[in-house]
Amino acid sequence: MPKLPPKIMNNEINKYPIFALTPEGTLEDVSSIINSTDDYNHYLAELHHFVPYTDWEMNTKNVKNIVEQKLILLPKACHQHLENSDFRMPKDEFEKVYKINPEHLLFDINRKDFQVIPAKLKKYELEYDGCFDDIDHDEVMKCLN
Image (tube, rainbow, N blue to C red; front, side, top):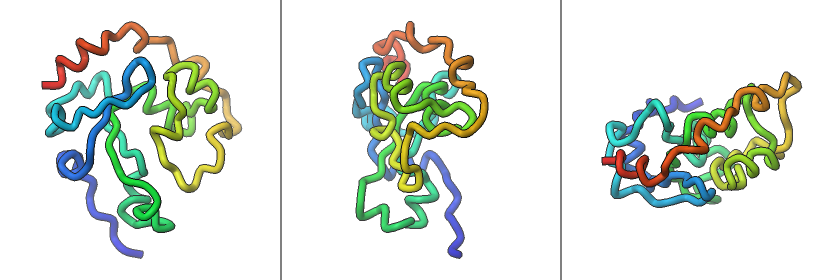
């Protein structure tokens, strides 16, 4: 098996277009604003690969021929609800909270259905407290140097 190159986010930022999830559930191009990991608040948001890094780099199932890679700036809780198996929300819940289909944020060739939740306590019901609901999107965008 080929060795995976190390993931260096500043290199990734220079390779791919960058979008931010808006409160309205749309993706706003912020490529001209984010030039390094210093350009966003890591306490509030995380930069996320649309196609998981490993799938993209290893060309799993020729993923590079199916979609284009991009980075998406997500609120921390949203990122957990999207990818973390302990906190993943079902598709309909995710759409209610974040106003976007999770498949527009994560291209996962291995996940057949975003409705499937691991057979564990649905922690997402307890963990999401609306903490990002009152964030002023314009103020966040001003903070992105």
